[in-house]
View 1 (cartoon, rainbow, N blue to C red):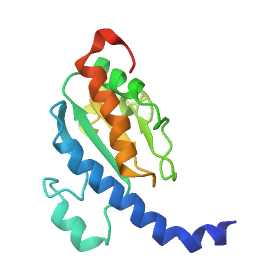
View 2: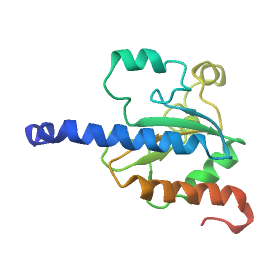
View 3: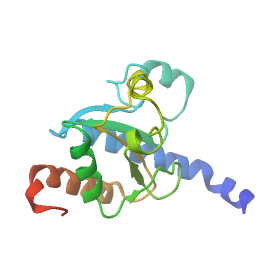
Length: 152
């Protein structure tokens, strides 16, 4: 099984990287997004270094929503196709709130030092059709615009 998986790794990694870049560019355009973190973006402070060191920029990105934990959870809860989990590197896209999951045990000072804020959302981008991923994330943005309607 391991060797079989290695045969398709380059193709899967290209899909992860391509999808992540497309999503990062799209997220930068969303009014509810404060900042996007993805080394494939020219706006990333380490973009030039990443270009020199690697052939792709990976499948994981994060972004800060305008707001706090309430908005982050509301956004995440509104997604339907994307799995809410802290797993990384799967062929299926996952989404998580690092401040309360992967970094939940850190002190507030350590979270601050690591840039883990209450409005930070992390996505491990899979290989699904990127338009489907955008549609699912748009549900999250719609939920932020209409909080009284509950989940979309």
